[in-house]
Image 1 (cartoon, rainbow, N blue to C red):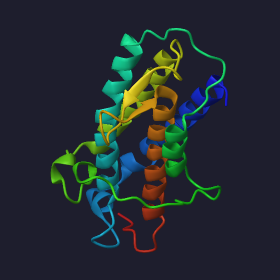
Image 2 (image 1 turned 120 degrees about the vertical axis):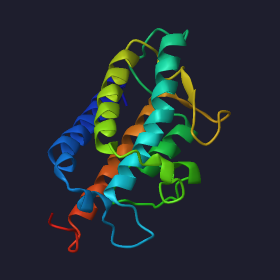
Image 3 (image 1 turned 90 degrees about the vertical axis):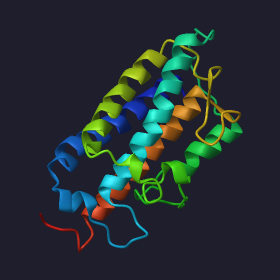
Image 4 (image 1 turned 60 degrees about the vertical axis):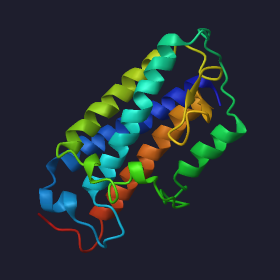
Length: 192
């Protein structure tokens, strides 16, 4: 893919997530935000808290790498590493907007185990993070996103190319926004 295509896809998904959050999630009641069909699933509030924790990890890593990298010449084409492509492909939704593979979140990123992830104003925080991500993407256009690498949330020793890390985070966000949409369309979802 070209670098322009990567940024266009990333910005399109992020803008879509932001629009959905502003139009749909911001208007939900506390009952709707905390509702879940079973104890083993996440509520919308928990989904957003999970995404916020990922943003709190990745956004500073992105910003630091963009400001400190010595790779200042953007490339026309972006080539994923095998590890990077595997990571973001595993997060990508299917053609029918379905979640192809399920994963268990690490305990420190899982709001069922880590109740401290839920802050109360998680929807507002998420909107700010999505706006921040758009700013980060814009600033990354001036660096080589194939040569610059960032640590992952799994281990600081496992590093992804900046472009792969962007796609991983963007598709991860999209995947969980789709999860929130699925909850809202559940037949038992509260009307108020």
